[in-house]
Every structure is written in C-alpha cells, then in structure tokens.
Length: 91
Image (cartoon, rainbow, N blue to C red; front, top):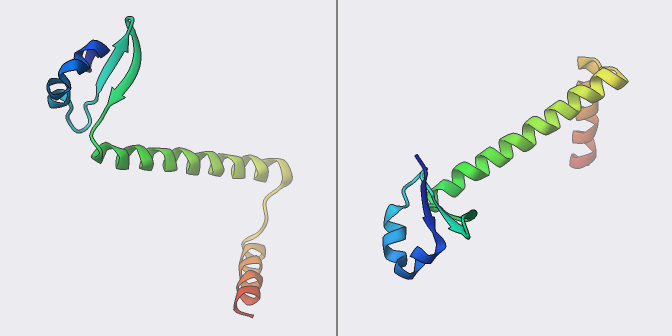
C-alpha cells in the first residue's frame, strides 16, 4: 500500500523521510491531489532501466513495422552492410 501524506507534513520532514523505503516512495498531496513523490536514490537505477527498456521496445516495434511495410532484408544483406561500415571506420 502506498504511503500518502499531505505536503504540510514536510514541516517535520525527518518523519516523512523515515517512511521512504526502496521501492516504496512517499506520495505528497496538495489540496487533496497528488503533487510530489519522494523516493530512494537506489530506485533511480530501476527507473532508468525501465525507461531504457521502453525505448528499446519502442525502437524494436518501429523496426518490425518498417520491415512489414517496406519488406525485410536478407541475412546476407545485413552482413554486407556491417562489413562495409566496418571497412569505412577502420579505413
């Protein structure tokens, strides 16, 4: 169950921070509506991984849609593409 507290509780911010646990942020309300969340720094790594996963899945879906619309290329064409790129980089 989430911890929800009115923003006025920040007057005693130490007590609010004691309620924060990894994976269990404290949500602060203002006039009865959600306004802020306080979470542990270690949760940032989880958020960053989740954002990266969403971006990766979005790019993969775009690639599948492009393949379906424009046609797929063969394994040999992919291999040639990357060999050509490697030659350009190496010189």
